[in-house]
Each structure stands twice: as C-alpha cells, then as structure tokens.
View 1 (tube, rainbow, N blue to C red):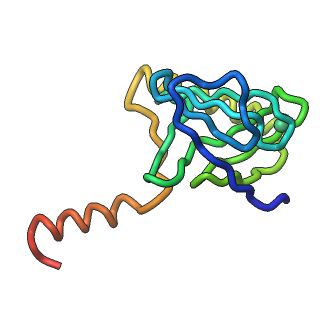
View 2 (spheres, rainbow, N blue to C red; view 1 turned 60 degrees about the horizontal axis):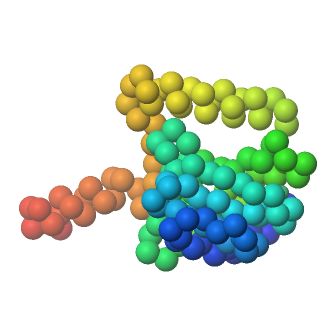
View 3 (cartoon, rainbow, N blue to C red; view 1 turned 90 degrees about the horizontal axis):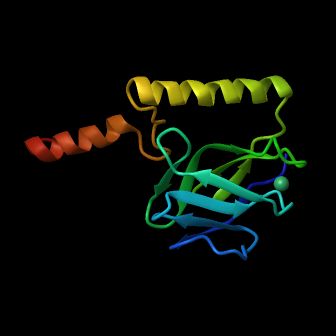
Length: 142
Ligand SMILES: [Zn+2]
C-alpha cells in the first residue's frame, strides 16, 4: 500500500480550467470540489458537496472529504480517502465491492429524500466529548 500523500486545498469562486496536480479545489458557491485524480493519472474528479453526495469538513487548516473517492469508472480505478489534507489509499476494490458501494449510495439518497438526512460522524472529536464539555461549561461543574 502506498504511503499517504499530502495535498493542498484551495477555496475558489469557480474551479479553474487549468488544475494543478495535488490540489483539491473547493467552490462553495457551486457546492462542488474538483481535483485531478490523486493517483497521478490527472483525470478530472468532481465531487459535488451535497447531503447525498460528499460532505466536506474544514477545521481551519485542512479539509476532510467523505465518503471516499472511488474512481472505478477510470482506468486507474483508484480509491482513496481525503482526510486532513492527506490522501489515504483505500486499495483496489473488487467488482462486488464497487456494486455494494453504488447500492449504498442509492440507499443514502433514498434515505435522504424519504427520511432523516444521512450524515456520517465527524472525523475529529467524538460527539460525547464535546457534549460533556458543553455541559461542564453550562453547569460550572467539572
Ligand atoms: Zn487516477
């Protein structure tokens, strides 16, 4: 497995036509992130930021995108996670896993439009920890 690679993120108004390799371009006005496939093949990868597509987290320094980016329609079929401005290689996926992933995406969409929004837990800091901090602050008790 390849070691994680560091990338850069850039908040842009509109995604530039000429993309730099190793840069994740994020357009808030268009709710979209675009990058050249981080495997190095350079193919354009578009990840719409939507409740049913990808979610983006920005901690002030680095960005995290989830779920993973799976370029199974590209010759490279690369699959990776973008977490804290770093790319973690998820390894090749079998055809069955790809189909399972697609089914899961569809299910997420169905859930979103039919029921409660699908939102994976944040990458950093577990929810319970934050709640406790807030409670301590509220009550003045440690
Ligand atoms: Zn690629």
